[in-house]
Length: 218
Image (cartoon, rainbow, N blue to C red):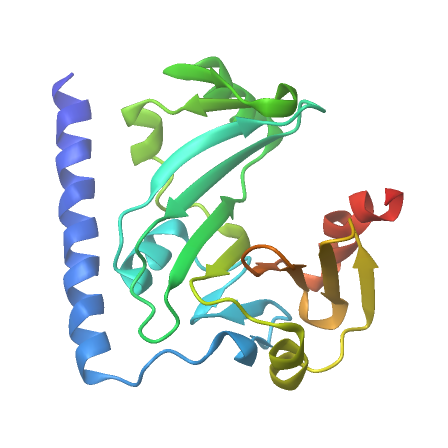
C-alpha cells in the first residue's frame, strides 16, 4: 500500500514538472503549427501538434497539450479492446478542439486491464466502456501513442479542407451526410460530416489500411 502511494505521488510530481516545463516553453516558444501541416518524421511517423505517432508517449502528450486526460478502456462489438486518453481542453492556441489518443498496448496487456476494470458501462451497439483502476492508470504514462484523433471546435467546410489539405487520394461516402477524405501517404483520414464537426484521425501510414478497412463495406 505504501509503495502504491509512493508511486502515485512520484508520478504526480513528474506530471506537474512536465506541465510547468511545457507552459514555460509555450510561453516563450513558437505557436503550434496548424493542423493541415501534418508531416512525416524521419522515421516515417506522422506528426500533428508536435506529437509523433508511434514514438511519443502519453506523458509527452500531457506535457505538450498541458491537459490531464481521462483514460478509459473500450470494448467494441467485435470484442476489440482499445485504451483511449481523452483531452477535453488541450492547449492548442488558435486551433481549439478536443483530442483522443489511442495507446499502443499488447493484446495481453489490454485483456489484463479489462479483467481488472474498476467499473463497466454498457454503451450503444453492444459496446462497453471500462474505467481503469488508479494503479493501472498510473502505469500508462510511458506508453506510446498509436493514433491521434482531433476534433476542431470550428466547422471546416469542404472548400477550406481542399485548400488546406489538398485533394484526397480517395473519398468514401459512409452515409449521405458523412464522407471520409483519405490521405494514405500521410496516415490521415478526415471525416467530413455535413451536419456536425469535422474529425481528423492520424495513424502510421503502414497501418492505414487497417483504419480504413471497415469503410470498404460501405
